[in-house]
Length: 425
Image (cartoon, rainbow, N blue to C red; front, top):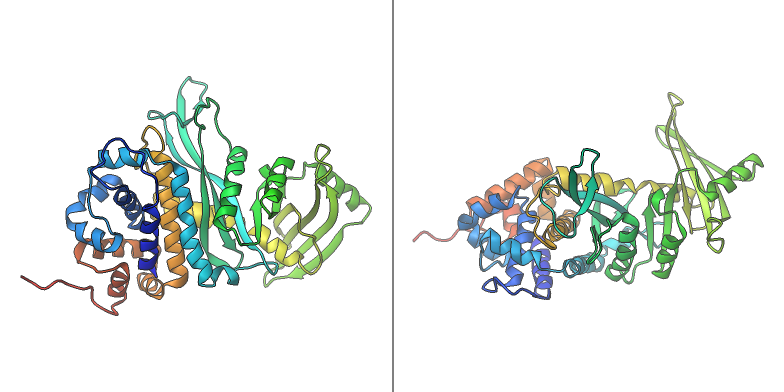
């Protein structure tokens, strides 16, 4: 499966528009494949990847299809010219494969929905290097910090560990603008991306309280998406809820887990706010208390356009709480588990930093699909115990021995079969 995915990614790269004026001696598909391979192999820096060109060249050709290996300047300058939208469209093909394998169908919640959670994170920060797209933070001492952020959209399931990146939108100064970008503006751009990537899916999106506003909810509705959005107790919805609470008119439902007691209150048919009285929304909250100590261990509140009932409140709460998966199982993994999202592989003058971040997400998507479907991947990871040890072992074998495929490397690790070795001359 992993090799099929790698070929699928390279096939997508062949469709990327080439607007370069320089460095035309290298095919753009090779340059993009080099970037993808660097994050696929989890090299800690571009220099580390480049230093091993000579011994890795044959494996890079066999496994990733890379025919030519440029210098790092030509590589960076070429990727700097690629429009991020071209790379954002590359998520669809691997996800289509996931759907054909029946995985998306098995991850439905509330009977028919795919859960997509959206959040922002930083991936570049410097006090020295900047570009026209850098956002700027001005400090009291007169210094400036230049930074890039991104908004990620990830398909999750409350009871499953794998997560699948759907879209990745840069939070940077837009072309011709002097103002910093923000998450809310980026969300306007990422919502259509999500729908384009998953055109046939019934989608329920999960957001934090920043997005509890009329324009955002209308944008979701225009793209045929449902929502669960956190609140912080300060909205007009919360005012209405407090009045209902005083009159004892909130619905109540309680259940237990092995270690906690969960108590939910909910109601339907509330006005979002005074400015958007045409938007009718529903409310639910969940409190979780430790059985032994009686201590409250969790409390949160949400709004949703799904009608809340005693039959679906448990699953709604579970879906709402799955928002943490984009922070813990996506951003944390990309920053601390081998993908080096925050490392500066190169900043560039246009789109390089953003494109490296998108390629990181794409490599992560391929790995997550392999973790879900590739038995050799699963067994090799089990042999290595941790992902860190697994990535190190893959790099070691990739460096040391000629391999006909990535699956051959996995089989070597689990000792099912030796890597294909060429005959001695």
